[in-house]
Length: 217
Image (cartoon, rainbow, N blue to C red):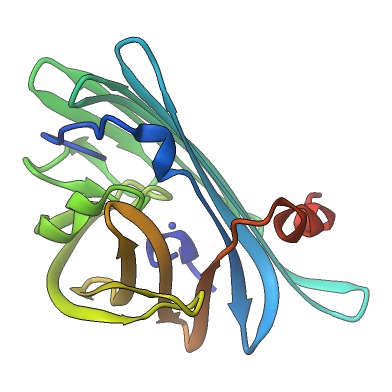
């Protein structure tokens, strides 16, 4: 169960949406019809841009025994339409990954467990909250910093995992997944990795999401 954040799991040259708070999203992560975790994105406007915080927790067990645990925390800091820093820490079932990316002039320089060097021009993060991702040719894995080649096609209006109609896009390349957006807001995903199919189901009711607090270590 490697690097689940890249498909579940760097923003350059984008215009920050005016209503950044409207891009907040919380998802239940389902595997074989059972909830195994959550993915939360909080987009907070600042005087100069925005701060984006991502938290992912997953746990797969057999009775009281935990077989797999995944924890990921990431923070993006924006000034206007430029990402000035991205920091993340990940515990992938005991394997530790990190990303520490900072902007120096026109370049975003990545120091990460999977890649060290400049981000390609126009690369996007695998945080998925910004719809401009669907126009990018490359992503930066927010777990490892690796550069991922992608090609995106628009599928059209379809039924998203939360059972509402939204605009679907399919990404193929180093990763393969489906993304749904309602306007500019990310509202769903599904993908298969290591033979496991995961589905992201949007939840807007606080009590539904609060029930997942038991996943915290």
